[in-house]
Image 1 (cartoon, rainbow, N blue to C red):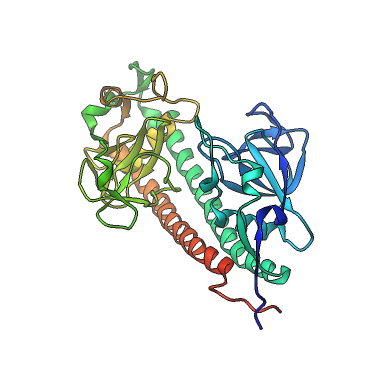
Image 2 (cartoon, rainbow, N blue to C red; image 1 turned 60 degrees about the horizontal axis):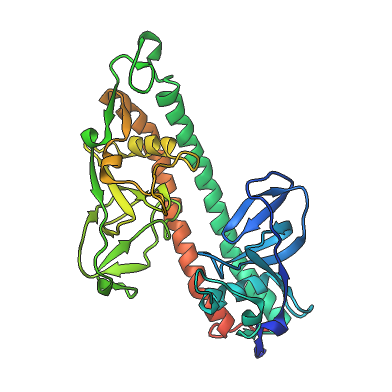
Length: 375
């Protein structure tokens, strides 16, 4: 027998708490959550086992589950079950499915309030069913987390190899090669420092008119910026029926505005919006180029000097200085990079598939389309 779910107001299901201002970037035992995830640490906590909701800004309505003790910033709300008849992990999935950003107001920037959220209608099954739903969806999240951890390890291995060979210059045979001065410091004799325009093909994005966009899959995948970047490949959300500037499979995607310097890889032909550029090495040394650019452009070393949004021009991009070792050294390193990058690509695709399956299953479980009998 299947138990029916009750249609309820969110205010009858959730008890809300407010975040409190704290300086981001701190250290401490307890994570500090902003509207888009962890923004630092704190020696104090104000919440435990709750759901963080982005309250204001670009991530307004986004939800995050934190089962431990934590601090929530003033850009967030925190949701708890209003009674023992609501499971906290189920509540997280319920709020994720509700797409709370739809209820945002505010003229200057999006804002959700407790008053508005309390009026949202949700479907709440009995507690045993809630726990089964949470258990099914948590299994997907655990698989996703495991894949992401493996990707992280593989990426660090690849970074370490790049640093050893191309930053510290401890590549095979380096002992017999003297160092010579260059524009960026001493480098091994026979190596060069060249501008990106001399060794790569660069394509800058340009957005077509909005009437050519759609979300139903007609046309070619369109990417404006980093919103849909995954671990390694972008997740398609928008499509475009009028081809503009193109990135081909294997091209490095490099964001050129707000924020600058985030990277991804095209796994097929896509159309570039004005927030992205595509870079292709003239000798197809993409793995080496990826590691060099990623080593150069970290969160602490972004380009850009725009007054409102950080942005870079085509000239800025073409003027990036790159270390260019002899081809034999790059190809020897590539033999080590390729297996790591291949496994990262496989895991990234598996992660996207798991996300897709979970996101398809979530509304079906919550709506009762997939029925679960009480044990």
